[in-house]
Length: 138
Image (cartoon, rainbow, N blue to C red; front, side):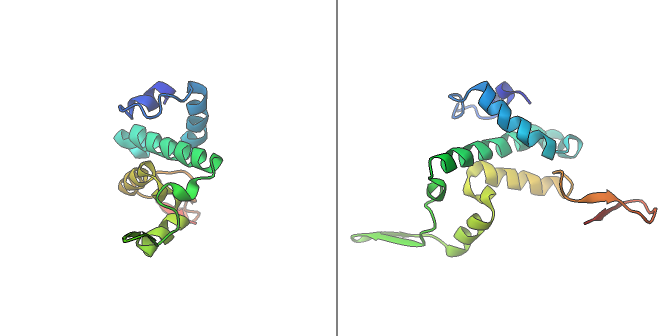
C-alpha cells in the first residue's frame, strides 16, 4: 500500500496534511504484521484502519492528550446542573486495549475478528511437530 492508497481509504481528507514519508513510515511498520492472503479483500481497509489508529494515537501521545481521545479516565463530571458520565467498564477496556481508543482502532478490531486467528502475524502459529496436518497455537 502506498500513501496515496492510504489517503483514498479516507475520502473526507482527514490525513491529507500528512506527508507521504510520514504515512509511509507507519505503513512500513504495520505491513509485516498482516497476512495478505488471510485478510483478502479486507486487507486494504484493515491496514488503513490500523495505520490511521496508529497515527492518531502517536499524535495524541506526542501532544500528551492520549487520555483525552475519548474523554480520559473520568467516569463522572459535573459543571453546575449539567453532568456527564462514562461506563467504567468501557473505560477499563479502553485502558487495556488501545485499539478501543479510536474509531479506526475499533473498525480494525471488527475486521480482525472477521478475518480470524492468523490474520495478523505474531499469533505464535507453527506446523505441528507430531506430523499431523494443522497448526498448533502457542
